Length: 533
Image (cartoon, rainbow, N blue to C red; front, side, top):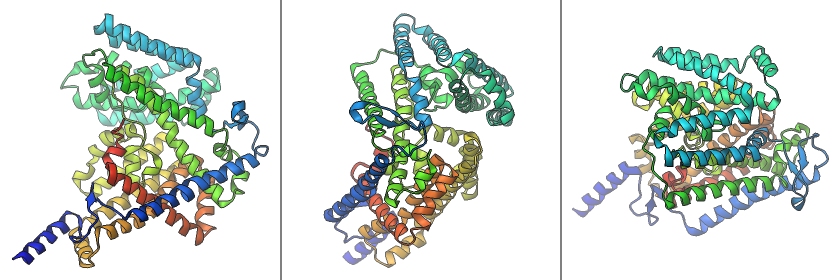
């Protein structure tokens, strides 16, 4: 009788996830525990050889190449930190220009006006926020940029009256084309007063078009439910809302409108403390980035191809790692600082990116890095096409259209095409693998070979490591362009074969084990969704 019960319990465990009833290491958050010594070995190897040593080699090479970089990529920094700093990242410099004294004064004045409006004329608060936002943006980017944006906005608001999704899509794709056409861009260049205004206009048009898309498609779907939600002032506030205008994070119109229209109440002490805590986190990120750029010139190497290709292998790997970490920290700041300002208006925006080293799947990278963009793609492309509920073919078609739109939105460049293609292939392979491993046949085979939970975890890490490497290389392709992206692949994989790929596989395996242990300790959802913020 007892043997029947044991067999029955074993079958149940097999269905629930291939458990070994005799395994001493119990699962937590669905992940088995490893021996402590084994984890310590993985941790030591990952910290020393995956993170510290490659970055140290970049530091050594950077200091040895100070006078070899192209002119202008290194500028005078803080004397106490050594004098010179890496100034080659355009996007970081672009954002930093916005938070000069003028930008900071405008933001603090905006916060003060918002508090006064809430206290003395709460019913007019949104109108005050809209007026101040539009005036502030005009002061920061000149009236010419604002005029261009208003022309785009008025056109899209008129398009929304068609109440046809295909017309909206055609208008958005057409407007995006206007900032890709060399012929039209030449007119824009002549119209704007400076290079900063020119690039700001292009970037703002691209970002605003995602908001146009969200508003217009929501208008098409929900106008009959409540037409008062889609007034011209609601539209303009959504498009030009100052805290989120320049860098995001993106929000759908529905989410933004529901929050901004809520009856506002005074923030409690606990809410103010939460905002201050988050802001301090982002200030620390800014300080860390600025200090690091005095010692490791990773961005400068991407402006000096000849120096990059002559780097020793460990230094080249470290340079790529620095770029990936900087990519995440940069958007942590660019999404996080606006988020804290929006929180003062009781608008809860998508959270900043997850740590890029803590993501080893393509699916999770898209889900938890730019959460706002993921929400737009999910709600307006993936789900309308069918999503995961309409079968595998519709699911993959939805994913393909999402990546096709991302490619088009980013500017139809060659390296963006390959980056989007590699990401789509990665998502497809992960989806197929997940379906195969969750099939009854696969579970029966695993049970047949009597694999323990710990063995299953080791196999999971081993087979996840190649995907983790592919994800890192794909991100480097996106960040550095086609020539430098291929250089990383050629030096790290092809020319160093087989030693290089095997070393990378082992190091990435150790990192996957650390990530799995973090998921086991705190929970993947808690970490990836940043529930601790």
